[in-house]
Image (tube, rainbow over all chains, first blue to last red):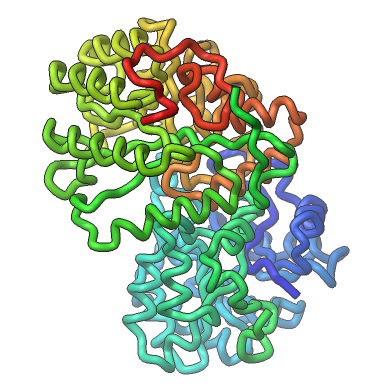
Length: 260
Length: 301
């Protein structure tokens, strides 16, 4: 059972994205032989108040409850965010998304730590996005920096129950965070493989060898990025690593990441 | 005519039985400051074999920054990199071909280097970011390319809106100006997935028939391939991997989904490359271009 931990529905403000809707996503999952997906609402990352985006997300995914799992957004510097969190948990959220860079929240912003802890208390991982696009191609109005290692480390250290899934990170960020945490802290961070470089530099292989496969989960970045990329990356691993199972994000809410 | 090879197990379905040419590859060497320099080279061959690449057309940019800047290599490092590239071609004659890399700021050295490396079996010219593409300094380089029937692979930033450190970057508009001045030279516009606004590139070169787009680069934006096909058609798209081979494989599979037809995919996989490289330049690929103006058969470096 494979779950894509990093998908969205909805448009992107800075370029046209072809058919970013749940029907297309289910078709893509079938084609790529992926069983399930964690799905966020892409426009919510750029809304001042993501509440309306969450409503759209739940309504849009309702027809595919067994395939598409909602990951709504909670903005922790917004009044009554705790109420929002309880509400989306009640509606079946499997995880919570937050966008510190897009919302202008500094690494040590107290509200972020509170959100990470509250998600941990609720048994949900917090999903962070390193980037939506390469820095070289960003629109001039897109001033958000990539997610910083300091932010990730601060959130992991915020409390012992906080668990993070970080998407679209590259080797440098992963190593900076992983080796900047204690073993107990590291065990509460997972990384999707959507933006890891394969051969010839073999960053992905290097990280599997040094950090361990259990810290990585399948993720694509659809609809912004080609859904074929993570599988290609897995298939191009060196022989000794190709059969190494990475984690499955779908079991995170229930405990440790299961081996696929 | 050489026999048509079978493709590797992972390459896209649409290219069933057709060769796969990587027009944008790189290798390292012992003097580029990395103790692990052999590992990426081995990894490229490993991944290439799994994808089904039958020929890596590659360049080495000097010492990759070790003793002079990657995009502004010194003459000594340019020659060293080319020597290493040609040595690798000599060791791997069945699957490696070389671009000759030049820095157009040193015109005499660049022209001498093109002639020297053509004699030793280079099949194209690599221009990085040492000088903007529309600079008059590139005209003698392009003229040399025409004499040797070499295509020119030019490092491109997709829409330059400002300067970036360490490079004298060019975009599609800049390369288009050079290509219009040299209509008999084939220019490969590097890595549409290499960062930047590729839609700007498509608009800049769609009506310039001697500019070809290579699909390489880490960028795997959905819609990029569709837009490239719409802009220039399959006869002006060539496949490459640059330094992220997994994104190259993903794009081949995405082309299967777009499904422009087996002929169109064959164009992208190898047929267009066969058309723009010198006749006989690519091992195991039935090229149809003009024979290279070299003193050595390129198939036997």
